[in-house]
Amino acid sequence: MKKLTIHFSLLVALAFVPAMCAQTSAPAIPRTADGKPDFTGIYQWPTYLPGAERGRSSATTFDRKNFAPLKPGGEAFLEPRTGDPRHDEPRDFCLPAGFPAGMLSGNAMQWFQTKNYLTIVHEFQRMSRIIPLDGRPHRKDIEPSFYGDPVGHWEGDALVIVTKNFKRWMMDDYFYTDPKEFRMHSDALTTTERIQWKDKDTMSYLLTIDDPKTFTKPWSQEFQIKAKPEWDAVGLFEYVCEENNRCPGGKCQGN
Amino acid sequence: MIRPFYSFLLIALASSAPLLAHHSFAAEYDDTKPIKVMGTVTKVEWQNPHIWFYLDVKGEDGKVTNYAFSGGAPGQLMRRGIMKSAIQIGSTVTVDGFKAKDGSNNAFGAKVTYPDGRMVFTANQEDQNKR
Image (cartoon, rainbow over all chains, first blue to last red; front, side, top):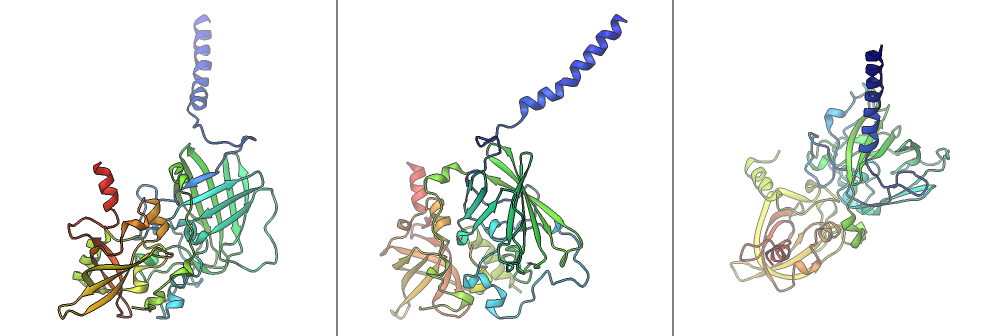
């Protein structure tokens, strides 16, 4: 009986070991005064996890192995090339990158978090995303837009941002790698970003594409976002695309 | 279809190419029209969406032609510590690149070097590293 009691005590003690280990190994992450994870800071753009397909661009692009099957008879995922430069590459004429392509562009980002908002400012085209965190619903009866209508909420230590109401637009910069592969999302796109600190310097950025006009089901890709506190000294630089866009469509002004 | 020679050249130059954030290479430049010139820097436009620098290049007939070369986005360059002072008016540089699709004297400057072989846009950084 005594032997049995010792074994039982040992089992009880062992049962607590994983919990104790988990407690001691939980990463120390930045937190706000009210205990929420704090994402205020300056960051590199979302970058690839090891093993992901990489495009030939300073921007990060999606890995085709993550794509869900295309919807039969759905909207064109690859926009046909027409020879009209304004149609074939609108950003060369300083039109916006939109989301998610702009978010993945290879420039610095600065994030500002308050209780009720997360604001993401991207150096590329000075993209600004103002994301309410106060529990409000998506806005109704507004025009579809390049960057959509985002709303964020907390799921434990993860910030989840759901964005709807996009206009049909480019999805990423893979056309830098292959001009024939100009990927588009439809106006039925809903994106879900799940953002969570992995350690004090690295965030997991899980982006889910739910585009029922284009794909048969939602699909996701995880990226990482690295904190770059050393970039804070100079901050973001101005980006006014129209300032000196000398060769839109390959037709140059001067020289 | 990229011809094998130009494909090789494009890959060879890619390692030193400025970062194209705003548009693809194919939108503005022609990979079948490589250009290599040496000249004197006459003007620098350190502006978005890409920097431009201009060279006076003397041809074999003695005639001087002004070429304009596109580089990286200023923000991306400056975050790497490469400031406007990296390329000075009056300096002599050699540029390997590709001409614009319109056949004008505008081009993409993939590789920019001083006569001693140092890379123009990283030369100052290399100098600093040697100290």
